[in-house]
Length: 96
Length: 245
Image (cartoon, rainbow over all chains, first blue to last red; front, side, top):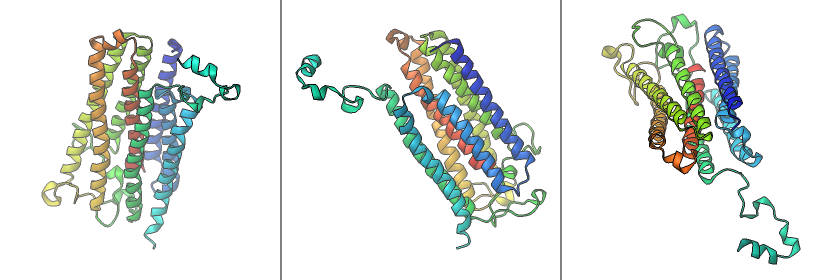
């Protein structure tokens, strides 16, 4: 690897993860619980940002060939979609 | 032999795609590829747990009314801030989510040290691989210790004498499934952390005795690194979906 600059990227990514986690805490404590949908979407958005940095930089996926990136990414996108869909849908199940 | 074969192949067939065999189109070693696909299947398992958690959680009614009047009841799903509000050495002090937040920081920190170990491995810097792997192992063990405390605290609950202990079938916080999901999801993740610590310890031993240095490759550190980052990644999702939302 490119030595020094690579270490700098790692450290910067570490700081980004810390800051986003701290932001999650700010939202958790300052935003009223009644705003459930906004809270949930903010938390999920920040989680996806953290996931992006962990997978792309720490797991080095960003530097792999395109075919490998897509073969990992496509199934994961479907999983996240399923996660969101079922969290939302189950909220209406009680009405049936 | 391969060259003599291709020379006999008609002109039309020599235009080969990278996918025709005899090449590695993904430009990654066999071991690393298999680790990636194992992690993908592991992601399916974890999402199965998290999806069922989401379905059950939102199927139950949620608490309505001011948070300060909240009491534990089996009529609605508990608010996580109220369940996970304890920190070690400060008995009776309300500190919602501070302890799990600390656990999250510890795991992210150990991910940073792991990637530094991988980076040192690529430069064949045995001493630094050793140092950063050791820090990663310490981070993992600290996380496991925190989880042991968290589980103990969760099982004992607010008032064990009248409300009883939390178990898979009942708990003092809310509907029985709340504790069942807590034990399953954090337990399954904790077991992954434990396996990661074991793998990293083996990699640390092999680094310390110079096995990878002689081989001229620290690929095993890269593979355990992939696994370790995945464990961190899963915790990021567990933290959001179980503790924050």
